[in-house]
Image 1: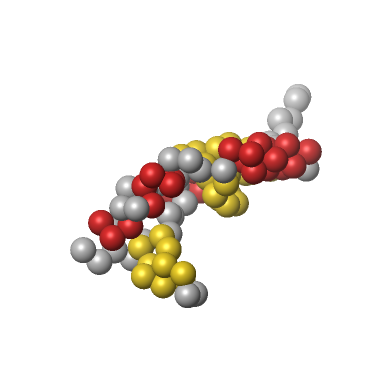
Image 2 (image 1 turned 30 degrees about the horizontal axis):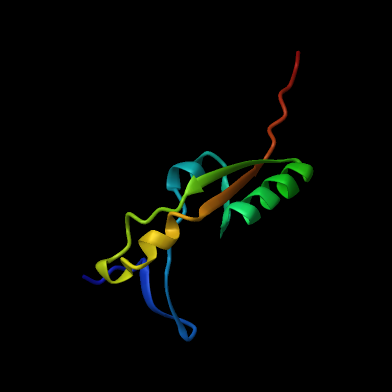
Length: 92
């Protein structure tokens, strides 16, 4: 099966692409990067200090082809970091 989400070459290294969650993008979230638990915690602290909301989501492996099946185990150890600027509420 050929799937556009799985790339046979990423530079000189085989790799997979996990697309951002369209629902989160529609809600104003911006996908930043994929991180392990330590880097995700660092990102939460850094983005929060800059006035952003931060959320972690599992890596979306649903669109990967069978040739990317080796990535599934690795994806379970990582999270996708999403951020958006904190919304300010107007008080009347």
